[in-house]
Structures are given as C-alpha cells and as structure tokens.
Length: 260
Image 1 (cartoon, rainbow, N blue to C red):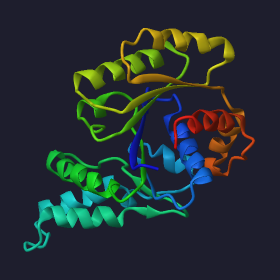
Image 2 (image 1 turned 180 degrees about the horizontal axis):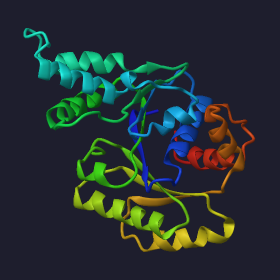
Image 3 (image 1 turned 90 degrees about the vertical axis):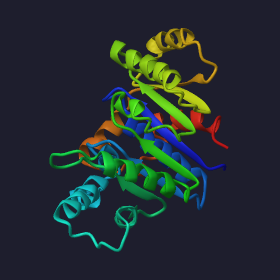
C-alpha cells in the first residue's frame, strides 16, 4: 500500500469519528503490520471515546502546547536548545502507542493568548511525524475552519461524511467549493452518506450529480446502526464490533473497492 494521509470531514454529528474508526478497523483486519497513525484533531476527542480510551489533558497536543507556552512565558526553556526542538520532543512523547497503531489526540488549547507561533511549529512537526507511517487517518473538527487554515493541504484523499439533512448537504457542497477556492489538491474526494435509509439514497445521488468536479465520487451510503450506538453509549471500543455488524460490512464493501 502506498503511503497516504486520509482525512474525514463534514458537519458536526454526521459520524466522521465513527467512520474514521471503522476505517481503522478495516485496515487492521485486512493489512498486517501496517504502520498506522490516527490523529484525533477534534477538540472533543471523539476517536478516543470510540476506542474506549481515556486520555488526560496532559497527554493531548493541547496539553503539550499549553505547557510549552507557559515555559516560554516564564523563560524556563533551556536557552541553548531551539524552541522547535523542545516542542518536537514533547509532541513525539505525546504519541500514544496502542496495540497495532499509534494515536495522537489534538485536544483543546487552554488559556488565553495567541497560539499562532506554536501552531506553526506544530503543523511542521506533525507533517514530519506522518512521514513515518504508511497510513495516517485524520479525524477533523466539525465545520470548515480547518480548510480555511489549509490544515488539510497535505491530505491525499478526503472523505466527506454527510447525514440525510439539508445542513449536511450544505456543508458537503461548501467543503468541495473550498477545496477549489483554496487549491487543495486531493487525489480523490469520497462522499459517504451515513444514517441513510434506502429510500433517501437517491437524494444524495441527486446532490452529487450537481457537483462539477471530476475528483468527487459518491462512495455509497451506510444505514443507521443501533449496535454502534450501543457500543458508543456503553464506552466499548468500536474496534471490538463483530465482523457481522451491518454498518461495518457495508463500509468494508465500499473500502475494498478503493483500498489496495
């Protein structure tokens, strides 16, 4: 498998984190010894919840950058060591080693003041980290702000997740428009409908037909799955879903057609 960075985006509440986790499950089930990094870029840390993992604030990138900012303000950083090297070391230490993949949780920033300098350093560090992995899965925050900051500029393939709602469709269209406006050059943009009944699938097909882009493809739709909701509510890892789970089977069938 060629090295890829794959991002999941869309309106809040459409199931980006769930599909990111199901994508991870598919990779773990079908590719042995694949080096995988999962970056939970959502401040709410939904991926960690779906994996059944508790992450303290100190172990998130938000915690690392907050500590780094305080050290800068207090003048307690070693004067002989470049700041980017200090932050890079702390970021590498924050990577959580799971059983067969690594996890990086962005978390939230804490406190007041501008993080522009730190965020600039951080982005370069994360770009460097992803080069060590065959696959990086990015679960992005809800909305569009990260596109405006070009956080996705090095992403190879973009999955846009939408639910059967006008708001979900509107966000989908706006994301696609922004990729053109900001010249974000994705190899492929896959649209996935989540929580669709068979009777609503045609609505998404009609919306996709309105899009004038050769890079955008409708991958398919996934039905609402009560078992996944139960796992989420009970704090059980989505990775432990049985192979017979309907949503996983449907999504796996889609992925088998595009993942080599």
